[in-house]
Image (tube, rainbow, N blue to C red; front, side):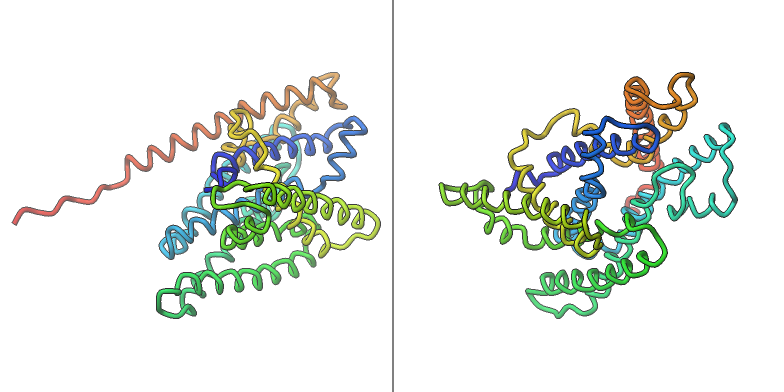
Length: 350
């Protein structure tokens, strides 16, 4: 019904933001132009908020469509799938560190495998999304026991699942606040909002001017759409300016929700699907986890010790090649496992 919420369109949004993340990560290794530096600093952790939002949205859509069978399988098709992609990448970074003479301890290595620490790779997002998947799984299992029998059981179950997820996530934030940097938890509300948005999207979008056609309808709908979109952007900017003067992670969590809603509404106007953004969105994990490899290696090239335009462009090209190869190999392994999986035997003749 809502074209801008279809998978191919949300994938393009993620593709756009992973390129923003790439530019931001360059700041670790080189000095950006002042305006670009300002833009990256202003956007801050919001650049990853849509990854969390669409993850929550996608999980909730799957739960609503597939029910408890999907929930019960989450440790495999969500958690194990992420770790199966992540761990080989960590091993690549370990090999790279050994080749380049970058020291690391055994403890650092093993904690990197569970994404708590890193060997030069990005890790916090992987750790957080794994925690959120496990929280969602546990929450809906518990909600399934609480939900009453009857025609409204699924709605009752999903309501309780969301409530329990919120409570457990609050606990996770409290713990992370004590033991980790703020970027581990200051956008975590995006995932929760994604779950909620999936459950209430018809009501929310109706309040934003959308009609049964999936678009703003009539002059009133268009005016309401423009007003709510402007409000989301304005509140995000206002809260961002407030945080710059008086940092407060709770305000950041609230701002993240307004930012996500603003991007969702603006994505209605985007000419998606787009081939380039879709390509990057479909290889979001691979680009995210591998982009630092060329950034680290190319700093060793004579004349590129301080980075520069050619350093940045070559890092992007090599990231694309690595992401393409990694994605292709992972897909080949999945297809091979599917072919080798034992098929159910036909019933014996009587």
